[in-house]
Structures are given as C-alpha cells and as structure tokens.
Image (tube, rainbow, N blue to C red; front, side, top):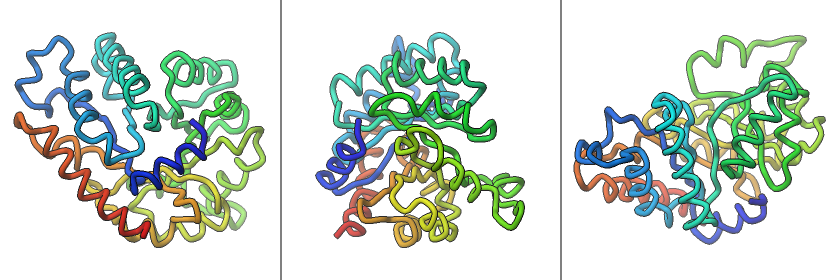
Length: 270
C-alpha cells in the first residue's frame, strides 16, 4: 500500500487508528479456547467488528511466535484474511527485526513478500546495511524504532552524544539511506513532548505512535505536537480495545472502544 492510499483511507474513515492484535490466550474469552484456532477466531471477530473504525492492524509477532507453529499459522491466517477481505486496511508486522544485510533481506522477504504485510518494524541499532534491505521493497514501508514509549527508552535513546540526542541522530542519519522515502518511525505516545523536535527533523514522515490508552499516552497531546498536513500519524491501541471484554460480547466491546477513539480522531481532523 502506498502512502497516498493510506492517507485516502484516513480521510475517508476520519480515523488514524491502528489496532494492535496482541493475542494472549490467557486473556481471550474462554469460549474461544474450544475453537480449532482460538487466536485466529479471536482476531477474525475483532477485525470484523472494528475494520470500519480503523485504518491499520498491527500484530506483534511475539504473541504468535510464543505459540510455536500454531501461532505462526494463526498469524498467516490473520494477514491472509485481512488482505483478502479488507485490502484497504494497512498492515504492520510488529517484528522489530534488524540484522546484517543478507539476514535482513530474509526477514524482509518473510514479512513483506511471503506473508504480504504492508510494513514491518525494524530496530536501527546495527545501522544502514541492516535497514536498507527492508527499504528495497516497492510500495512497502519500514517503520524504524526512534523514540519508544517504555521507561527503558531513557537508557540510550535520549542520551546526548556530541551535543545531539541519540534518537535525533537516528532520525537524521536515516534520511540519507537509500529509499528513505519508504521510512516511517515509531514514537511513543508517552513521549508526546518530544514530537515538536521530531517534526523539525522529519516533518513529512508517518509516525506509528503506540502507548495511547493502557500505557497512559494522551491522544490530544500527540495530535497537537505530531500531526502534519497529511495527518502523518497512526495511533495504536492494543489492550485497551481488544480486551475491553472477556465475555461473549468481546468483539462488540472492542468496537465500542475503537469507536470512542475514532470519534476523538474525527474531532482532531475537523
């Protein structure tokens, strides 16, 4: 999916909501555990109930890899279901990969070619030759970790080296990489006060912003400092939506929570 197509969906739905499909079998409704594939059954119900309210879904691959081959098959069924039934939805493989060039190429092929995701999250620590293999895929995006929402982000990301914070150096340097127009960036909602400086460096890039809801991020602050002329934001909410209920009405409860966020987003777009 191109950036232009994503922007079109944002305008059409009056939403820049991304829903995280982080499925924990200990948290899903008990009645789904009787299904042949409870992870996919859960995802399908959530997707069918919320697809009109969001523009993206983001499965965190750890929640699938933890269940071995069955988890991986559930991930494959989920992305296939999305691509077949809701091709207008932007998909993110939250895999946080990144390794030496030939390995990164294989990671990229796995998520962007074989599974058919629109994008994949990548860690920048190993630098240019670990990221550029992801950037080589046409009409696909690489979402680079820039300033994350966790407390440990302060261990390295905000440390100053030669007068410039590390995350700012990552942003500046990444702009020089081949096919850098295919980059998006992860910026945590709990770091909204940093967004002004980030926008000075990457004014036109899309930002994937996790941390709204359960992690304490504020939607209005993110929009105030991070929105650009094309919106430029994908606000992710996972637990706050998909685990709104553990009863048989879980999908309807998820849709209600998603609707609350979508209405707030519509106000920001008005």
